[in-house]
Image (tube, rainbow, N blue to C red; front, top):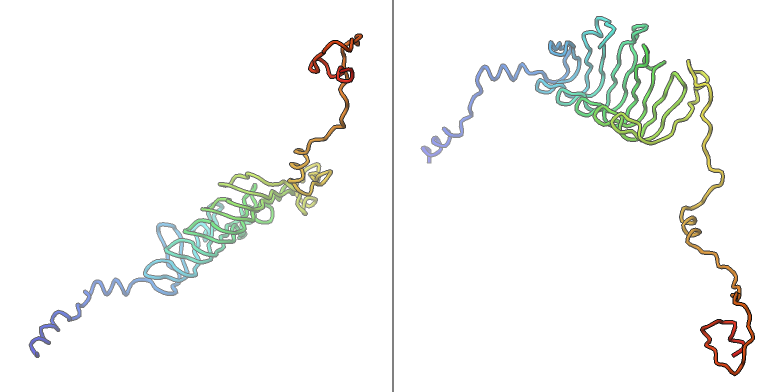
Length: 247
């Protein structure tokens, strides 16, 4: 029994991890880390990690944002999963006019793309947020998809309806509440569209169309020239209905 136990212990012996493997595992970033630079994206990341992968809450700042470049300067603050923006987050950019930080998108992300519900400001000329167009609605893979409202800040109008792949498919164009305060408002307001006579139910229309008006009965008039009829002569009733009174 003793020999059998020793024999089994040989196979149950714990296999030690190599020194190199232990160093690699210990060097993996986990938890909160500060100022991790990435040469590929030319940015640095401050936030949570899991096995060398960005996961949790964190902030990534672009190199151009640090140097205050006019282009491609951005900062993202929000949730991460598998090294990609995932969850709720805020993407900000630098205004070309006054070099101030402007919010560009606030909302949901999925696998690094805007998806779900969010607020998006579009660049118009050289402005963001205050003087740029704004979209409030649904996104799929970074594009406007579903129901949403697009605000034309310059002209003071808004488009509300259904979108597909950044294209406006169906909806209404209305004057926004801030139309009179817009920098270049349209010369004439959009008139209100309404029905002159309201129809309660579309079924009533079909029933009305199906009903046929019943015309009052009128006796048919014989247009045959009247002739003298001899009673003794047999005349067919099919000849003319006016002869029925004679027969």
